[in-house]
Figure 1: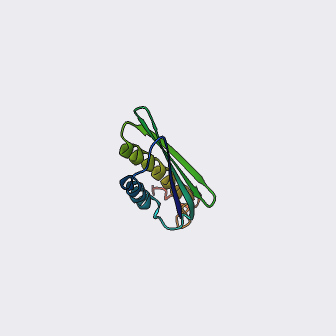
Figure 2: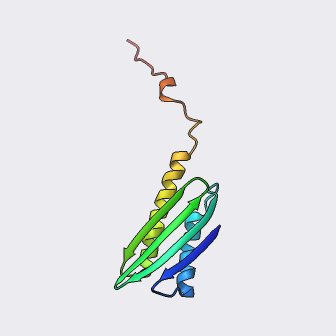
Figure 3: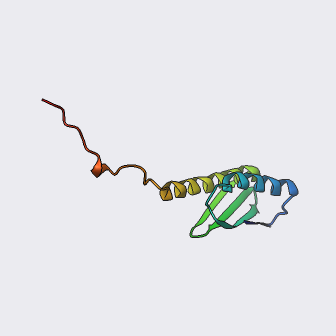
Amino acid sequence: MQVIISSRNCSVSDALKAQIENKLSTVLDRPNLKITSVRVMLDIEKERNIVDISVNLKNHQFEAKAETKDMYESIDAAVTKIDTQIVRLIDKVQDHGNKKPLRDVVTEEPAE
C-alpha cells in the first residue's frame, strides 16, 4: 500500500505525518481489502483546515473530505468517513451463503 501525503499552502510536519499514518493504518488494516494507494491532501485556507483523502482499492475508489478549524480534527473526521464507507462495502460484499433464504423457511402452522 502506497500512502502519499501532500499539502497546499502549508508544510507537513513529522507529527502530522505520524498522526495520518497511525489513523489510516488502524482503518485500512483489514483482510482482503487489496488497497493499491492512499492519497492525502492537506490544505489551509484562512482559518479552514481541509483534509481530502482518496483510497483506491482494486475495484473501488473512496473519497472523503473534512473541514474544521483544527487540522487534527479534520484528519479524524475524514478518516471516520473513509471507515464508514469501507464498512458499508464490507457489509455489502460479505457472503451470507450459510443462511437459509426466506422462501425456504417452513413456517409451522399451529395445530387446532
